[in-house]
Image 1 (cartoon, one colour):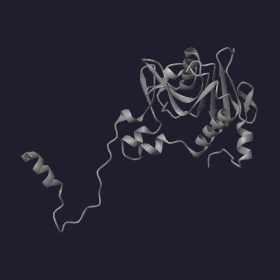
Image 2 (cartoon, one colour):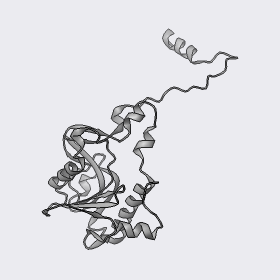
Image 3 (cartoon, rainbow, N blue to C red):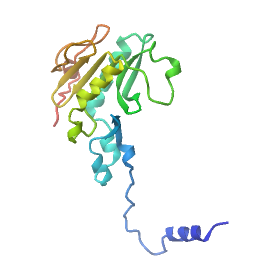
Image 4 (cartoon, rainbow, N blue to C red):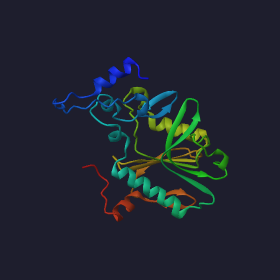
Length: 221
């Protein structure tokens, strides 16, 4: 049996005959939690542009999605992994694969995992809780406009290396540069992307050459 309250709500939702719709639709309600990109040192880092979503100027898809250049580069790395590395030895994680470092840090990356580390019993519905062998980052998608987040790239890199990742590779499309940070190295190197750099086990990548072969300029319009 319907309650009086439910009947009233149903009646209110019906448009009287002869009355035209105003054409207005209700504003989409987006929770801030759905726009969190990562959690770093216990602080949520939101996708860049999240404030535009919360004020209705953009949709979540507009800020969460990757640019064409970003996903082409992700595809390039994944292709190198699958076609040139030992799939019996490694597992390959594509874009935005989550990694749980501890209760204060949940990060994401493209990654190569050793099967001996990411064993079948560790594959479930949660984030990986073991370190990747190699982590690859394509640009900064988090909002780092606050002063405490200016050092985001270095801080995230250091956390991944301390967690046990052997190498972290950052690709910056704005400056066409690559930063390579290795756990055993004395320094992190940043260079232009028109050069051969090792991914893993002697397999090299060269972003500048790859884009040139594809006829892609890799520049912002």
